[in-house]
Image (cartoon, rainbow, N blue to C red; front, side, top):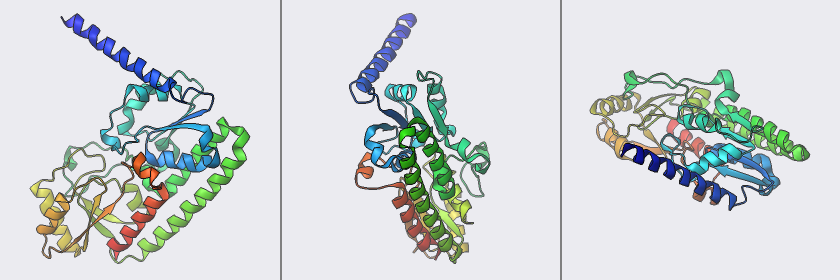
Length: 320
């Protein structure tokens, strides 16, 4: 019986892979165009900005295209096919991307160019923090923080690395890619300057985040401090009484007028903290971590720069 079950599992896996291959071959993926795979929205948006008018000539697949958080994403057989056969793969390279390392071992395109964002930013990689009051802090191992795209200056390094790879793969259009990259990096620089001005003028430099904290790079870039319910990659969603009490006390100590949550977080934890604070009148604001941007948002014109601009406006209000 055990042997029979094992055979059935193998057959199911083979059928799934064949189905994925058929799906890819039935699309434009197998034509002669450049094939690019990105794992998250920021990488996809950067790549599209670099490609510019040549984007229609490139097959590009963004794997987390349905608004799923990268920490809970389950890869499919089709994902493995895309990774195995692409010309350029762009991924973060943190703990959540362990499955990609396995997929790369099965790659059939031996000339593939691979960009791992954590390698691109090198010495500026930060460890995930576990601060006082953060739930489960003593139980967590120190790992590299994955959320590098929330740093504008690190985003610029990543954009240039992607541009160099695309120019290597499509040298005939290199001048266009260089021009597009320069324009985009100028926009990143302008936005970075706006962030610096806003944060330097802020009256309050410490924020309360009643959620996971994926903003390590963003806050570090501009000298901001924080208290949060969970670490950036935590799988927890229910805050303990001790965590709620600690954060409510910090709200009172800091005389905080604002409590932050992420775009995927609910209002339950922030509201409970507010209810346990002295004044009970804090405003809940949302910072977008850009982890769950799907095709629907993209089709509405949402992009990396627009979301980071919106985050800036949130910080202006929170720091006032």
